[in-house]
Length: 211
Image 1 (spheres, rainbow, N blue to C red):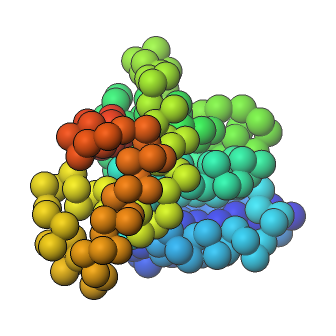
Image 2: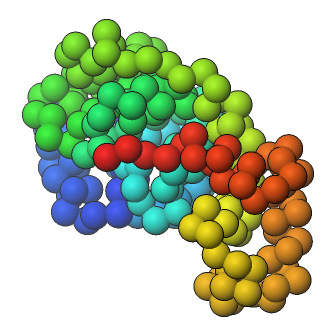
C-alpha cells in the first residue's frame, strides 16, 4: 500500500490531487497538511510515508525553507514538488536542494501518476525537456544547509532583515522584545558565518524564488 503526504495550503488543490490519485494507485493512504508546522508534525507522527507531494509556497515555506527543512530532517522520504512556479531557475534550485522531482500544477493526472511512480522507484522526474534546460546551482546547497538549521523564529527574523526592518519594527511584527530580536540576529549571524545585516541578506538572497 502506498502512503502519501499531500502538503498544500489550498484545500481545493489537495482534494483535486486526492480525487485524481485514488483511482491510479491501489490501496493508497493519503495524509494532508497545509503549512510547514503541520507538515513537520505529520512527518514526525508517520515514519512510513512513501512520498511527499510538497507545495513551495505554503505558510512557513517561502524562500525554499519548507523544502530545505523536509529534505534535511527526513532525507529517507522522497519529495516531489508540485508548484505553479515552474521557471527554469526555480526547478534547478528545487532539484539541487534535494527534491526527486518537479511537477507543474497544470500537469495532467496520468502524467502525475507516472511521475510519482518513477520517483517511488528511486528515479528523478522532470517535465519533458526540462533536464536539458536546468543548471544545478551548487553554491545554494551550502546556503540551504545553513538556513535549514535556523529555528522558525530565527528564519522569520532573517526574512524581516531582508525587508530592511529595524530591530524595533521586527520586535513589533513578531510580538517579541528588542532584546530577543538582538539575540536572534546574533544567532543568525553565527549560523550563517556573517558579521553584518548586508552579508546575511545577500546570502539569503540566493534562495529567492523568481516567479
